[in-house]
Amino acid sequence: MLRSIDILKETPSQTAGPYVHIGLMPNSCGIDGVYAGDLGSALVNEKTLGDRITVSGRIFDGADTPVRDAIVEIWQADSAGLYNSPSERRGTADPNFTGWGRSATAAEDGVFRFETIKPGRVPFKDGRMMAPHVTLWIVARGINIGLHTRLYFPEEAEANAADPVLLRIEHRARVETMIASRNGNDYTFDIHLQGTSETVFLDI
Amino acid sequence: MSIPSNDKPETGAFFGRDRTWHSPALTPGYKTSVLRAPQRALLSLDGTLSETTGPVFGHGMIGEQDNDLIHNFAKPGESAIGERIVVHGRVLDERGKPVRGALLEFWQANAGGRYRHKKETYLAALDPNFGGCGRAICDDDGHYAFRTVRPGAYPWPNGVNDWRPAHIHFSVFGHGFAQRLITQMYFEGDPMIWKCPIVNTIPDKAAIEQLIAPLDWNNTIPMDARAYRFDIILRGRRSTLFENRLEGN
Ligand SMILES: [Fe+3]
Image (tube, rainbow over all chains, first blue to last red; front, side, top):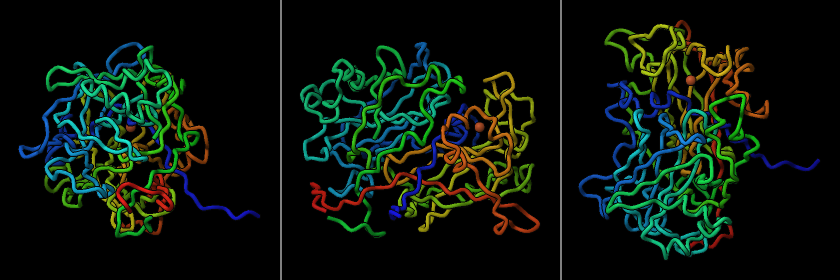
């Protein structure tokens, strides 16, 4: 008999459900005193290097209704393009920047919001530079497995045009779904789960 | 070229996700998925630095009672009502390697099946001494443990008479953002598991069984709490053999 290679199976995902805030952001839903604060509520402090920006947006379902019970997490490089992670071997990231944030979409209007910095560029596997981007991960009731996507910056047209990930998108009109809109230092990134402007989601 | 070791963080890309093992996005038996399931094909990528890296959470952030749901919301000297249980296990990757330092966050209904949440309308009573959240960080062997009360089953609006089996929600951070996972743990022997539309979004019975924690009789604490064992598997990484990487390792 052919000898098998022992590989375990990944634990199957299940929806985060309607009460995900109890587990991930208890202070935001009135469960005070268990943790000092909600994890991921601050990416920056007063010493963080780089250009301060905000990223906010909404998640729309297939009926164009904002999803008001989601949690969005972001993960991004610091202003020099380094990740604050032990797997980052190219250098040491800004110790005043966590790189990771978590926001609930608001119960009233479905808006998520992050105060962060504009990330630097990070190389693709073959050494080409990727355009500056923020990685997003979205979970909610009705989403069976968390959705990954990326936010790119509209003022980086040249870098975006050469970005090895954006270049992989066959239907070029869909590239726009990964590019935020800008108003000064404030960026808006709306996510569409379905429809003609469905966001490009990644299997990574 | 690097030799994976415990001393040096790994940098390889993760094994491709077996999406046939997970629920598809669109599962009409679970009605909320119908308007929230992406309909286009996902863009498949071999992980870049943006996915092979991820945040780490030090043991320092964990408070003494974070993994004790019986007491972490209770008034001094009081405790949550319900069947006392210990839930423990290991977080491993697909290669069987412990994921040291993995952060687990968990949340659940109280013993009556009621969540402490303003949108929750189930008529079962709130327990003034139960908040319903906890967290833990895995040790060097990937082991974690917490204590809680066994959650109750609860009804939910989907079909006319759908009930969730008793379950605990888990959120898991491994070492790379591509490993990020949220799932639910069920209890051995619960007949409700097989009736649940959310459980049944998972196509493969063996995959569902991976979410069912067996009673761990030997770790039951006499005169105190029964134990359940729940091991969690995160995606494994390729070793970086023969891969020329910019960073020179
Ligand atoms: Fe639940």
